[in-house]
Image 1 (cartoon, rainbow, N blue to C red):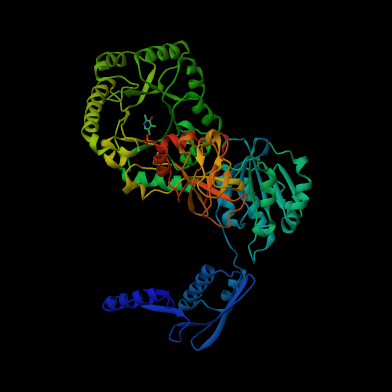
Image 2: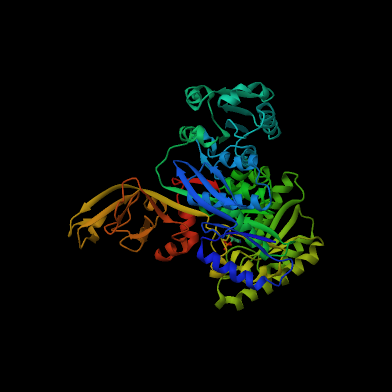
Length: 614
Ligand SMILES: *Cc1c(COP(=O)(O)O)cnc(C)c1O
């Protein structure tokens, strides 16, 4: 076993030598390979010469002087490169040809952004890197977007040193065909020269440069399609993205799709592997989006989705989501759309049961999937324990339903003080499902747990759980909260900065009288965007240059004023964080005397959502 490390870092050096002492007896022995400035290192670094964006690193090993060149000048890249070099030496793979390849490294970023574009297009911005591997990641992300039927790829030359371009672009073309891309736009001299290789794609256009493409943009008429914009950094594809992007005021809710997947996996591993998961995507997935979130969850094999109202389910179906969707609050008038879009209603009362039964029978539909809601203490919707005998006698007759699941909702699963009541709810629920099971003679899922009950009550031992707020990065339990990733970040920008005299007031109603000469920044967010008015007059704070500054005066409809007197070097146009990783939403909710759910779902639709995957 080898350990390769940098001895210039005193802490690492100290830990490694202590570690080594303790490991002396182990077999196989741990062998060390160090690099650093001092002469005793296996690889002694004698000089690091930076010039613009390249660095030449020289070192001595086996008594000979060697050097590598890398196309980066930042400390992290230099350290990473030297460590790689040390590994190559250790593995005896340090021949000239291999070491020369350091010069052709290029920065990669896997950041994919999903944006609303002009003419109802969806734009995936991946204008950072372009090699075959990242292309296939980008294409997979593209084909998971089901909101439009047409798929377009705008691609620059692919950077893959040392590959014959005929082989390379044949491979690119077959990848595009395999992913069923409808339209292909190639930009760059190499791709232009290889255009005949793409002849089996329906619609193709080729340009030598971004400028040439932009001139032709009007004739291409992009509308109602999913577009992947993927180019190596040197091609400047961000120009294309900014032209295709829909322009809106600059308050943005950014949603980290990777974080959602992380949180999903976190809750999954708390449950036995056989337990099914239903993701709550009601109210635009707690404000973070509809199909954008649902398609990520579908891709990660969630078993069920749930929405509050039929329209929400219809929207998901129209966007191509095909997994089962439960609708919790269905009105009689929505029955037709329900069955047209194969949405599964929650049945919560006898009148609804009768109405839906009649509707199905008159349409000749049999075995329609439904879910039964039991009221064990919330007293909102559902059949009570007292309703059971009547319910069971109906279920034992001939009904056009297939009961997919039976469930109840806990009223205070997050609260230890209410655990006795929670246990009582679970007990009543188990009694109800036992008698329903014996009447039906077939299996259905039983589910009780929301986010807090998954972690605090081990899902009450049921075979499905309904995960809501935890997916979006929030759990009432602080131990669990630490394990989750932040999903949403709300940012805005400063539209004006002004100096205001002591004694003057700021905002409506003259509520905020200034005690000192102050610098006031007006930001582009107000209560119409979902920033609560209760956060006015110092109750709320935002992060400017990573420092908390108070709201001054009343929050207006579209704007809010901040006191930035104590900060330096703040400029108009600067970005301001309203909540996110550095200013957690639960803190903001507390300032506003409410819960995170209300803030999240209250961010208005006028705030642009940007999705990214890092
Ligand atoms: C919203 C909702 C959930 C999810 O609750 P979280 O606390 O967000 O996990 C679960 N079940 C039902 C019936 C709901 O309405």
